[in-house]
Each structure stands twice: as structure tokens, then as C-alpha cells.
Length: 181
Image (cartoon, rainbow, N blue to C red; front, top):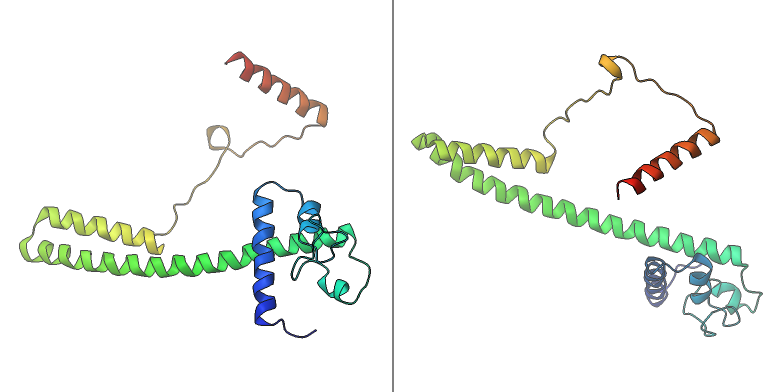
């Protein structure tokens, strides 16, 4: 299969954006897939969607994809589009993190000079706060270790329950919630 042209890539990006918009609006997968299908006979708008699902089959005059194939295509589109958006966001976050680190470095230098030169306690406190913020921003501090224990520091007791026991617990919880209203 040949690499898509620039126009085709733009149409695919548009289709993916439309798929995400529809999904965010609460539209079910099959409706999304049909709305973005290339073949007018299955497209819910009765129009050929540019670079829509099954466009290769439609161009060759073949039968349109099955509902399952359309749904898989719509799911894949949304998954790939969200993955691309995450990558862009991660790049932007890294760029912003670098900018913020530079700003903190400049502020710290001013506070540090006053703290060391003058012994200014307020400047010392400010320098420490800047250092704390920088450590949080860059993840320099090691996470605190937490340990979950049972009664009196002993091991946790894990119990199993069957469906009837779980339903009874849910009913008790729901009744207690209604009683507190």
C-alpha cells in the first residue's frame, strides 16, 4: 500500500478528530463508524466521507466493511488519535517544565545571593522554598515509602465473598446512604 499523500493524511487527521469529537459527545462506536464511512450506502449521512472507513474497498467497488470491521476501525482511529495527542502534550509539558526550571533557577540565584551575602533569613527561607518547588517540578525527591498494615500493625486480612454476600453488602451500604440523606 502506497504512503498516503499530504491531502490524504490531512483527511485522515480530520476523520480522527471527528471520531474523537463524536465519542466525547457520547456517540456509540457503530454510529461513529457509519458516520465516517466512505461508502454512501452505509454512511449515516448518505455521503462519501473523504478517507472514510473502507475507502479502499469503496474505490474498488467492493462490498462495504462489516459493522464489526467499521467499529474496529473507529476504535483504532480514536486510540491512535489520543496517542498522538498524548505525545504532543508530553512534548509541551517537557518544554514547559524546562521553562519553569529556568525561571526557578533565576529566582533562586537572586535569593541565594541575598541569603549568603547578607545572611538575610527571609532570603534563606525563599531560597529553600524555591529549591523545594524545583525538586517537586523535576521529581528530585524520593517518594515517601508507605506501608499498609492490618490491625495493630499486623498483616491485612483478605476475605473472599460470594455474589450473594456482595449483593447483601451493597444493599446495606445503599440503605445506609439513603438513611443519611
